[in-house]
Image: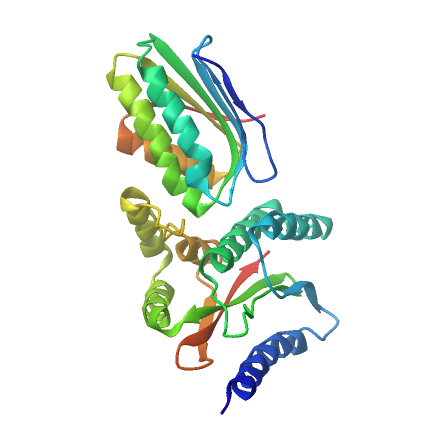
Length: 192
Length: 125
């Protein structure tokens, strides 16, 4: 495959991911609340997070659930800003979507990761997903005690926070785009 | 020493460092683009304040939200406060939080236990 056709293939994988989510929210009780498809820059974090917060409050969502969702939104967006990579066309393949199914809110995010990092990230998230609430809280405290900021400004607490705030209702996937990069998708659910 | 007043933004809190009143005030949310760039001037100010050998320092925190990187880096502030305390200054941290805000409360408890600082907890009106 030449570069242009392989990039088209990459775009197809990304578009399919977005369409799968949209198709899921086609019923009367299922709505997409927010969908941002395309680059996410730091200066958009506050705009998106505040928009979500206001939407949730307007729906009469309990304050506790709004706070949990706000936490997840900030961590998911910061992850994209700090760690998101681009493909050879300079496309970041990022999205941020929140779907509502009755009183269950699902936060979807997507960005590109290097395959060399995908292996470690997969191990970390698989481990997180296997932990119960007590173990997650213990891990949070351990990281807080020993944690330092990485050069990129990450702290290693972001995914733990997402797992805690969603009662560990997290799912993730890595779809290989080519020999060097993969699409990393993450979703977490919060019941209000 | 001069007063340092950092105005609140949508992603960062208001911070007032007042050497005349021997007080530090922190009001608002923490999810800056780069927590290190935001907090380092405050850590540096506290380093200078330590040299004044004051008798007391009152730190009033009304924090609404802390992102994960902010929780981690806030340690630098508390480490500095612990240094000031070990210099014979009575440091009191007034840690005010909303009634149902367990995250903020626990963060205060964590730093109290781990750094041996004097925290006074209060539910905000």
